[in-house]
Length: 180
Ligand SMILES: [Cu+2]
Image (cartoon, protein in one colour):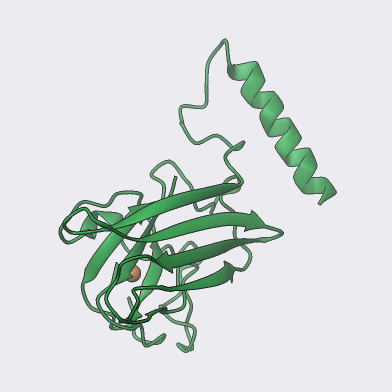
């Protein structure tokens, strides 16, 4: 924790020093937010779920909550690019995978850092999970989630089998939200 405080402190200092002069050329400095959130919208622009991502110790705690999805089980992942262009949301790119693994916790070559549990939604349209991505950070470090092009949370049309590369056989992307 002491090291983390020290790094944050010097990053803030560096940011202050840059305020009147040059910069590092990136809007995402190392002194980024400790938590971010996303409104997850379907192809028509309706908010169907919400997400938060928060730095906790050496990981990122991700919460995804349905507010208006139909009953069912949905694959959900952190994708590498913070762009959600409907209707197919392909601009969000592939799963966040800074360690070059395959998809899925049940895959011997898995898993992606962006892999998340399935989102289970009841008849009332409600359901949520909380999951901590280990050994990960939002900002700072070479493989931080919030790099220059950000990141997005994507919900797929069906459940993730946690095994099939590259996206758990979870079908089309039905909703997407930019983390920021
Ligand atoms: Cu996905």
